[in-house]
Image (cartoon, rainbow, N blue to C red):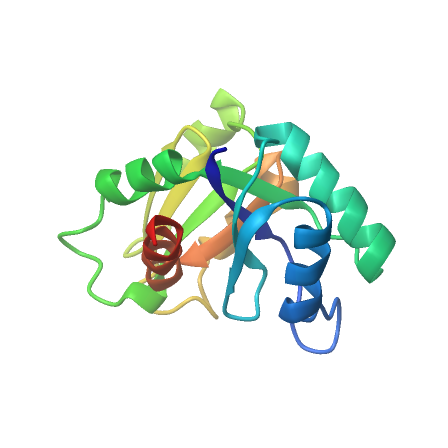
Amino acid sequence: MPRQIALLRGINLGARNRVSMPDLRELLEGLGHEDVRTLLQSGNVVLTSDETGEQLEQALEKEIAKDLGVESRVVVRTVNEIEVVVERDPFADVADDPKRYQVSFLSAPPEAAVVRALEDADVAPEQVLVSGREIYAWHPGGIQRSPLVKLLTDKKLGVTATARNWNTVTKLLELARE
C-alpha cells in the first residue's frame, strides 16, 4: 500500500472548522488506513492506504464531514510526488526564510491563461513559479501583506489550493519516510 500525504484545507484556523488531530487519526484508522500520523494542528496527515489520488480525496472529504462535522477540501500527494516537490525547489538560492516560502498544492493544474496571468503579475520582490499541480511562492516581505497571496485563491486559480510553508513540506516528507 502506498504512503500518502493528505492536506486538509482551512481547518483549525482560529475558532472555525476545529478538528482534533487525535479524533482525525482515530477516524482515519477506523476507515482502514494504516500508520496514520499528523503534523501540527493544521490538517497535515501522513497515512498508508489502498485508495489513492482523487478517490482518497473524495472519501476523506465525505468521512470528515460526516463524522467530524467539518467541510474541508482535501488534496492528496504520494510520498514520491512530495519528494519531487522538494527536489524541484526553484527558489533554493533566494528563499532564506522557510516560513515565508510556500507551496500551494492544487487539486488539478490551473488553466494555461491562469498560469500566464499569475506569472506575468507584477508582485516583485515576490516570486512565483507554477509547476503542474504545485505553485511555489516566495514572499520575502511576509505573507500577511503579500499581493501574491491574493492571486493564489481558489477563485483566482479555478482549482482548490491549500498552501504549506517550506518547513511543513519538508517535515511532511520526513514523517512520511519514517
